[in-house]
Image (cartoon, rainbow, N blue to C red; front, side):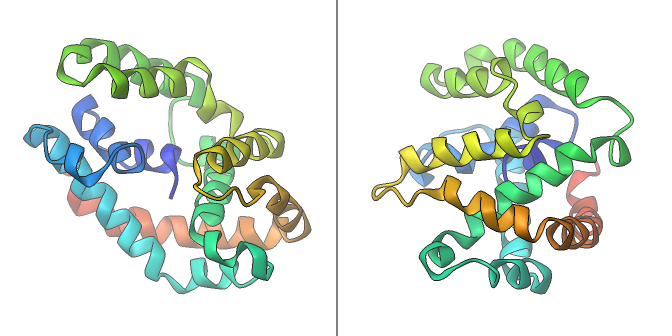
Length: 193
């Protein structure tokens, strides 16, 4: 799962939520420097990724990708699934996606001193640029894939995979719905305080 799902599948405390996104933003060495409240979120992130990577529904969706995208199947599927989470947010949360983002941003400001400045800026950028809300639209997913492509050692034109999403849209959406309910059930024990 990508950033939005990790933020959503978290406890309400901001350290846990930040920790649940951190492994996608920093190295393993940097992760070790964070305090225990962040480490709990980091563990949740890893459990989500482990469950997702091994799940047959996710693997089925990856099989649709052409050969040039197979290597990036996990990344692409994660981003596609964040689209469906954002698009169908009202079925998963009692607060709007916009309010969820605003609250996360306000909470983040409270712990600014607990996060290295460069990492804090990454989170600020995600929230200030309303990246979570942008995931609601395929065009926002395309932009997200372009940004991911810029971070790759060898660019792979990931945004070109949007055609796969569009061609199999209803398949990915129904698969996401089934998978996400299983993922929510799987992580529930990690989210109890």
